[in-house]
Image (cartoon, rainbow, N blue to C red; front, side):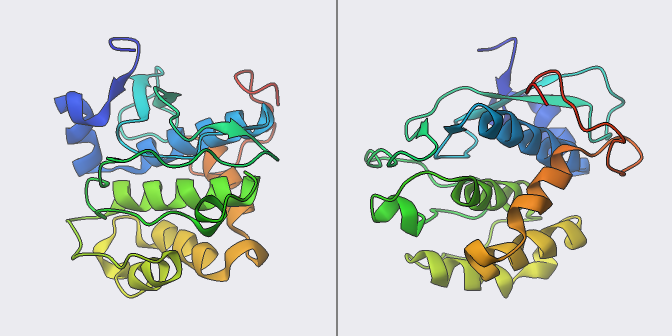
Length: 202
């Protein structure tokens, strides 16, 4: 809870950071995804209201400069168990608007690393979006296709394109390795030689 970790919308410094280069926020949120997966936990909702950030001592703009914290988990569950039913009134993302439920959530499916990676990817794309996108479709597959047609509207287009490609390919794609790679980035943008993370137990 603030001031240990602040939601993006409550901090002018974090909002300025996002506008300058949101990659550090993306990398920090990916590290949180990895930590939760190591604990066999599914957040179920990556959203500005559920993710907070605090400074981790890195240089501003560096991928390891921020640390992401789960502030709330209204859809949270253990991996391998069904997702909770979505409560009414979940707010839209900042720039992508209202996101449809993932098919695994809509159908009462079990939480998995693959689904969590897809939910993270949409949140990361919201951070990377340069400006609000037009109204999005109400079905997950249509929403993903909608994102794929707007790749040039994202900062760090190579990262956005990789995340979108993983979403399009679905469970058979390489989205989990992509998110894992984002979680292990350093200031140089290269994977750490030792990917052990004291916050996640490796």
